[in-house]
Amino acid sequence: MPAEPADGAIQTPTETSAGAPVETSSERSVETRGLEPVPDGERGGRVRELVPTWVAANISVLLLTMGAGLVIFNKLNIWQVLVVAIAAPVVSYGLVGLISIAGKRGGAPGMALSRAVFGQRGNLFPGALIWIARWGWETINAVSGAFAMLTVLDLLFGVRKNTALIVVTLVLFVGCTFLVSGLGISALRVCSTWSTYLFGGFSVLVLGYLVVESDWSAVFDKPAGSTAMMIAGIGTIAAGGISWVPSGPDFTRYLPRTASAKGMVGATIGGAAVVVIPMVLMGAVMAVGTPDLATAQDPVSFIGNLLPAWIAVPYLLIALVGMLLINSMSMYSAGFTAQTLGIKVPRAAAVSVNAVISLVFGFLLMVVATSFFGSFISFLTLLAVAFSAWIGVFGVDMLRRTSYDGAALLDTTRTSAYWYRGGYAWQAMTAWGAALVVGLLFTKVDWFGGPLAGTWVGQNGLGWAAGIVTSGVLYAVLPRTAAAPAPAGAEEQEPEPATAGSLSN
Image (cartoon, rainbow, N blue to C red; front, side, top):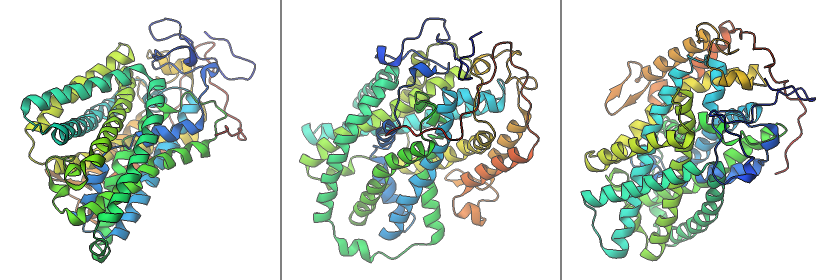
């Protein structure tokens, strides 16, 4: 077992799960590290790197479509849309930032740290649900990317989409996603930084065009919608961010233990908000003059109709890179989730499973489905409920612990300190299962309606919030699960000092 260093923090193993030596992050371009915690010596990340990470996670033209939906379906005016656009990233990415703190404490991916909460076997249940939910998210992103490619081909060469072309563009997009996500965290950081600059510049150009060309009297004369629809709108936009919460630690595990927790939360919210707010507002403005925008089967081609080609083509190409990055980040985290389920393959190979699933489901959504937007909103609603049950339990557990036993996280046998009773932490499992049920009771989508969907909580689209509250409160009041004694030499890390210094950013 590793020896305890002078500072009291356990040295985590410097080998991959396959036993091969791990190079430091500065010595490799392809990340080989899997679930094993990152040793302190390899933690050279900076808090400011989280800003482009979460900017890139939101570079999607789907935000335009969702902004349009707030006007067309929720009947909101521009001022209500502004409230939604501000509140949604603060709520959702605030949760992402808070859960991300666990990454610097434990140096491991989120679903690996989750083993300490649910038990080595118990973690398989939320892990499997989250992994499956990622299939849908990656499918939506793959479809959006493929539609963007088809729109560019139409604008530049007049090539109309057909089944064969749909398959080609979908395969190309998913293949590029697989390549970037397989390279690892360093490649994602570089791509995120450059796409942030490019997308930001062209978004300003699009915004300027809308300022000049839009009928602002029609925009500002639109009557206000109900408060319930505004609250529901916040939940809809926030659902995308909520889906990133379990992945938050994946992108902070390379940060030093002394990294500023407040800085991490601020950088996460700021990176998301700088994209979400203007994109949602632009979608709302576009919808006033194009009321069928949110009901189109193709969520991307409307850009070619609303903008001149000299703006639309480069904007779509840059957005295409952004959607590729979103999917790459999702697949990057999905690889870790697959490994926590016991799929004993390298992370890059685990990513390939999600790539294949994206291809199959993406084809069905592009060729068979009749309503993209309706399917997308229903998916987001259920996605938020699925993730919220985990968030409440894990969040309360974070308030109780400041460190994780690195050896116990990787030990999936009965000797693990996180084995608990039969491999399960029954308190966490009880709270998680109850929250799933409660969340669904208050939820209504196109093809499913819970019996409590007509209540105030349900009408305001707060089934996901009910899930977080239920799981958090239940887990807080149930007796704590005692960890089993750790194997000799695998002492738990010392808690971080309360006055940990802030990382310069």
